Length: 279
Image (tube, rainbow, N blue to C red):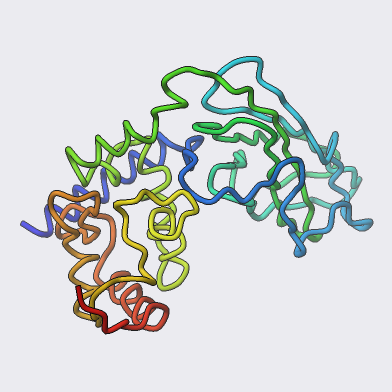
């Protein structure tokens, strides 16, 4: 039975990966962008002199005129070399709400060829100036693209009550955060293949250490009870009924295998040592 559940969970996440390629964080995670400034990306050089890839621009700004769920930026790139192919190995973005859509991975541009790179910014629950970056890892060194948008405020119920709607949904079905396409974009897909601290950052921090943490979500650094490895393992595996905490174990309809859970437990034991407090 457990094997069937695991297979079903994998299939469900495979479908979600396709469905939410352009959907990411919906505003509950601490925003990496600031008002009009860009988060530092020290590993990337804006314009390497020995890189034959030439972009139409390194900075694009698109300002929607009304309420939208995403903004798309299209960058054009040309390999100006007459004899050498250049490979774009992968992309890295400043947060999960920004997705760069490589046509293939890796993407090989032959001498003199060109192409386009769409970058999609999820704007759910956001308004005002937003600036994010896209790091381009190439065979000839790194490059940096910047996307900017000024999201207009809208009094539409979607923007104002979206978080309350999601909270109500989670109260009705705590596993929905891992199975619904719009929720899984932030809570499930970023955790795939990760472990330890990296897994915590992608799967747990979005709720537990967010600047916009809901009041019913516990602060892990201020738990009023003693904790140990068994405590963390139980909560991660089974969650808790009648709360917003889903069961993360694949055997319980979640997304994490036992190896991932053990790595997460080890991180939590070190990062959040027992407070020995009592109610």
